[in-house]
Each structure stands twice: as structure tokens, then as C-alpha cells.
Picture 1 (tube, helix red, strand yellow):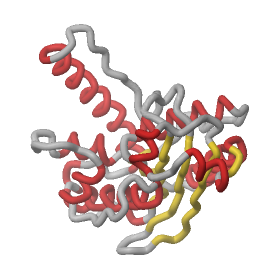
Picture 2 (cartoon, rainbow, N blue to C red; picture 1 turned 180 degrees about the vertical axis):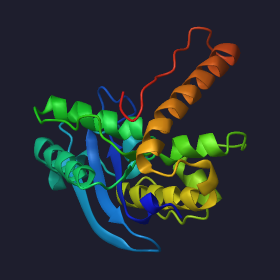
Picture 3 (cartoon, rainbow, N blue to C red; picture 1 turned 30 degrees about the horizontal axis):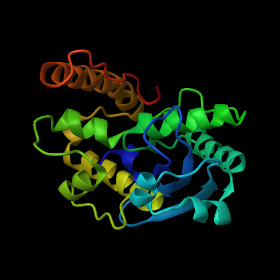
Picture 4 (tube, one colour; picture 1 turned 90 degrees about the horizontal axis):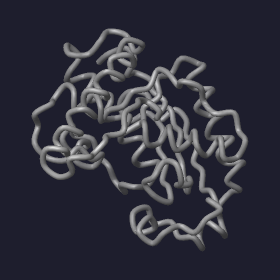
Amino acid sequence: MSNWSEQLAVFDLETTGIDVETSRIVSATVAVLGVGDIVHERADWLLNPGIPIPLGASNVHGITTEHALQNGRAAADGVSEIVEALRVHLTGGLPLVAYNAPYDLTLLNREAMRHGIPPLVSPSPVIDPLVIDKAVDRYRKGKRTLEVTSAFYGVVLEGAHDSGADAIAAGRVAQAIALRHAGLLPSTVEELHAIQIEWSRQQAVSFQEYMRRSRDPGFVAAIGWPER
């Protein structure tokens, strides 16, 4: 297992939707994982997003508007604490794992800006198991959701679409990839961060070509990693 994977910060959001520009944070987890089953520390947030939570989103993560109103923290307070927790870990040199990082990190950036909170600036190093898995096992058939990928790497994911369960599973998948594909990955986390920028760009271009060929000639894929 690569040295960078022995201790990782992990991060996941559950939100009101899929559009990073308009969606709001409903719940979040930031934790620090060691090897094996060790979780060194963990913080969880439930926020009142300030807007109704659509039924479709509630059906995914199980948090209703009423529950968030009654039990959630003020969004600005929660967002500030989440940003600061990530800043502390990154400043301390811990790699930050986020599955499909541009979604979570971009949405967090927009929430910070919305509430007048200084956002993370060029967060690094970030480990995105989705990008890495697509690069090291490009031709594997099937979906690459966290649930499917966790199962493929033998990682137990109980209670998917809970921010804590998803964050920890993403970290364990990153560790499993580091173990299985050590020979295909750069030796330092800084190099791995840099190459994921290029891998993500290549994957976006490939997806755009596929979509234009098969479904929508004008399709434009979002490019930008780990934030857009």
C-alpha cells in the first residue's frame, strides 16, 4: 500500500440536488481514516439548507425538509465549519478523498461564496477514487457508482447515500486501489494529484465524444478537477 494511503481525510456531502451551482448542503461528514478499520476522528453535520429539499433528494438520502428544519444547523455556520475542517486537514498534509470530487468540492465552494465564507483555494492533494479507477481499469464494464465500485474492491458500504457511510467507503476504496494498482500509480501524492487533473480531462473528453456520437451532437462535458 502506498504511503499516502495509510492516513487519509475523507469527505462527502448529501445535498438538495445535482446542480452544483444551485444545490445546497443537507448533510456532510469529514473523517480521518487509518489502515484496517481505524477511524481516527469524525465530524458530521446536519444543516437546514434554507430551501425545501425536493422529494427526489429526500428519497435518496432520507432527510426531509421537516427534519432539516427541526434538527439542522444554520447553513452558514455548518458550511464555515466544514470548510475549516477540510482546510485544517489539507494544511496538515493529509490527502483528501472525495468520490467524484468536482461535485462535492465545487458545491462546497459555491456554498461558501453564497454565505460570505472564505472558500478553499485550489485544494490539494485530493484523491478521487472515481477518476483513478477509470484510469487504471479503463475497460471494465458496468457502472462506476460508489456502491458498485465499493463492491468491486471488496469494500463494505452499509447505508449508501449517508454522508458518513459514503465518505468512509470512498476512503477504503482509495486504499484498496492503492494496494491493487500500486505499480500503475505515481509514488507521491503530489504527482497523483497532478495526473488526476489530466486523467479527468481525458475522461471528460471521451465522455463528450461518446455522447455526441450516440445521443446529443451538441453535448458539452464539464471539465475541471478537483473543482469546477
